[in-house]
Length: 249
Image (tube, rainbow, N blue to C red; front, side):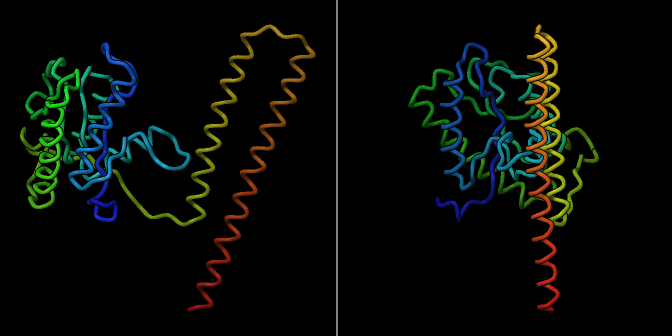
């Protein structure tokens, strides 16, 4: 199925680094398997911690966990970050499919939710079977969730709850640029603090300290200057677009 025909994004929550005896390469292979199954179901696969542009990673993860129409979560190895992100998704009570390998035991809190299982050794014949099951599960879950107002992944099986929501609003171009600059400034300040902490752990001569301080100040000023120039250019462009819209009116 082509990207033009996709139903939207299917987020993926899973380990990406070495865990429970599995290497980073192992998880890359698992990601490829999940991506193929997701695309076969008509969705675009995307790790929830991945996004275009510069932004704070925690904000990106929360937004994807809330906005993605369906999520596939691999709890193999019980990675703490994965379990936390799964908890957030279940709190939003949005379509979620849980998978795990055959070496990982069930967790008590999520054992009530069906888990699709795959072999940790990624045996070909078993993986082919697993991929088809996952594709069918994605299609079936999405169909039920979009056609049944009473659909629930987890919460409503235990009573009536007020599901957590994230307020969303459209913002003007200037506000978006300012927000991105604030994110950039946050990242720069974090790097500067890290640099200062590392510098305090080293013993330097007065001449070395002066050179480093001068160099740090120069780089920081240049980066801030570039950011401000970008902001001014963007604001001018936005204002000009506004005038053009008024003239057309």
